[in-house]
Image 1 (cartoon, rainbow, N blue to C red):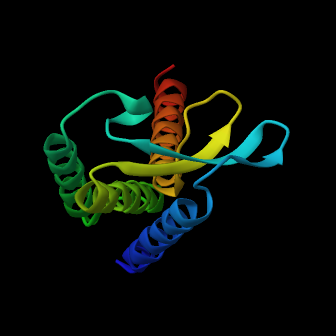
Image 2 (tube, one colour; image 1 turned 180 degrees about the vertical axis):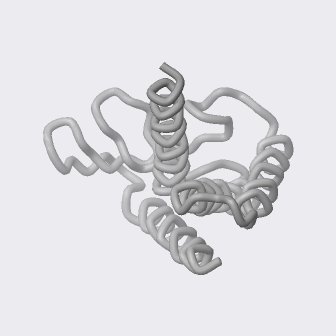
Length: 147
């Protein structure tokens, strides 16, 4: 599948931005706009810093990634479903790399008072968002045809 060539690119972008954040944002936050800043933070837990053992988080991310890779290769998958898989797997692997090397995830994107996140988190969020939009679209089609 041609889209999977982008996964290493997305993972590299994630890792390069995290490297730059660890190298350049050590002392303070760097404001971009009034409520947007680059600010170094570390997350040993799950989403929104919920506590969880690293080994379980790594196993979960690898398990979900393996499933999505397998699932996305089925012939009846839509282009959207394939994109969903590439985004989620790329983000999951990007954060797994941090967990294996640093035993925590490097975060640096801060908006308002929302938890600080990174490129991998954005990839996962975009993938989940696309999946939700596709499901909503599918539900609307079912209601129209059966309503």
